[in-house]
Length: 399
Image (cartoon, rainbow, N blue to C red):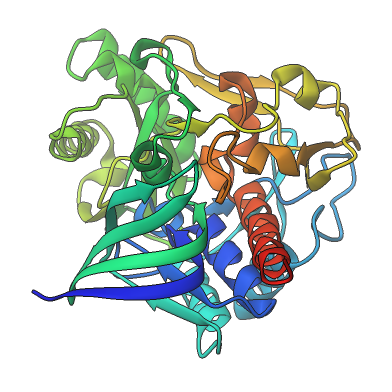
């Protein structure tokens, strides 16, 4: 494998919702942009995790919202998804509104956003493994790709990895909640062959699983499992909420839990008798991980009191949604019709001058992360990080 060098103005690490938005935003303003993604497809956890809803798009009120809270790429993506599947509309779940979507449509929209952009290059199946810094500035990011090692020399880096890959490798300051206090992780799998006509299946599944846990037939943490019937009449998607771990065997353990869960339901519920697992997530999705130490750290108080900021760049009305390891999902809501702002300072690393972050890696408290980590908000954060990166490059060019 050869070792090559490549210069770029903006390097975006992570091709999930925030990374796609960041790369499109930066390149759209003329910055020579390189996006690296560890998977072979765009969409990150939204695709790998079999997500069904985009959360964090709308204001929460009694009336169905007519448009997204943030404009720009978020609004474009939601409009395109609705055009591809007109039968899917904004849906109220509990006290919040979400947008259902089909995975194939999301991938198509993301592909169309990045396709043939003159200032954007995408490298799939690629991971950053080494960062060289000098005087609090990232100089080189070494990447393993299918074509060998590439030493990328960027002017500015955006960590949209969700895992804080560049934050860790660069030596930037960060916060990480202790393992026992972190939110539950999630793992999804798809089942086909369900009997049709059971309108109560979404209620029966958690009821029977809790019964199995009481009888010690399944692990206790699976009591927070959720099940959603899919758009196809005979299939559905499970989301297991599992104890967070740093073990390299986490995916194998999650797959075992998925099989055990399905096996039990086949024996207990007639609707599952002829069903089979047809798809499993390629990874365990952590709701919480590394968060950069930024120029400002958003707090729970900022969220609940709907605080606005002079440098507020993203609006959000999603509640603080914490998946507690013992209590399960806990919610704190904003007042109906209100929203808070996320300041640009939350996206800027405090001690690395050319590092910005978007998605789950931004500078927030453990509690505030429960609100900012959702897909719609992460997409809006990515767009603003891309703006900031392109502006950074322009300012340096004019010095």
